[in-house]
Image 1: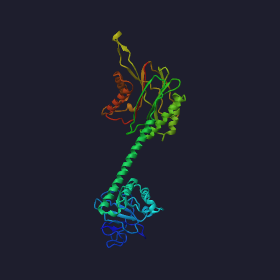
Image 2: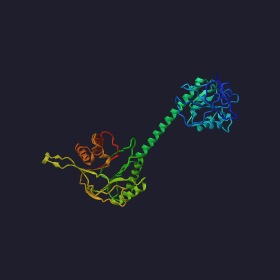
Image 3: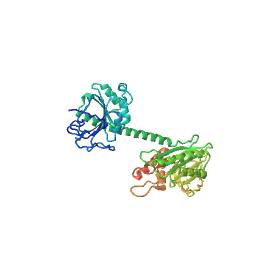
Length: 457
């Protein structure tokens, strides 16, 4: 049989751990707290997960002068009594609203603070106040019997469900409490998932926007690039590259690698790339440019152990020669078509020549040695060629199950075979990176960036 909600005057609110007998004070089976004789009200606990060993706790917010509202005895799904706390107004409710409360039963007829009940009714002001007060708690709205429209409006505002005041039943109410708690938990999980997806989309747009757009307008060179970050579900790693054409017709290309694979390294790589582009357009080249980039790195890095390797190439306007600077970075790969073999019309094309550019005169990685120098080497390219700049992620993958790595010699052989098959541009880079991954027996753990410039008369 329904039992009346106890009234608290001297004690603002109480908590009961029983589900039998009346909830009224001083009942035959309980003391003035509404619990079993000798029971002590449970302390306000920290956040308590709902499981088979935890009692559900319901906070009832209601002040009915007629005392007509009755809360039946209730058990949760595990057969444990649902604990009841009561509050006569929102001020008391705020004091009782601890993390161990799982659900709130709110009488929509309760006046909002500082406003008349009649004025609040049409706007569900009290419910909105409770939702702001308890954004992490499940809320059940209690409305007059037959007023389904008001109950539905309460759900639209944010309540998990609504009940009719005159139809409270122990089985119905306990089921509604469990449903509201689980629905609130589901809503939280869905909201966290949505927020996570939105953050991932924002990060993807940000990282995609930070990838370079080559500025080669007016150049006859063909450009292709391939980028594969080592971080899972990332678009940007510590590798970086860029290509621009300055007003004098010189094409400048750069590729670099910040040690490490995290977001901090990716951000530093973007800073270095943007600084390189700005300094290149300002007319800096060779040792002067790399010395300035080292100062940028030293200023922006988190600690003195962070360094970056770099390779820069400046190709003359006629496309036949280039200047090369290496700062602890692997040397680029240069390929040229083979010379025809055989007499007269029987001549056939020889395999393409593939070689590494000179690397003996390179300097140290940026950030390792103060006052370091990076000499600029002159390189003859010829009339038709392909120049591949890459990071060490491409050559440090393993070959098979052993510890042997691909290395630069293995990469030269691999690229030579692909060129002999007639591959070029994007197809060449895609096939090269895929074969390196296959030889490794799976995804490469390091970032990989490859840049290709082609000149065809």
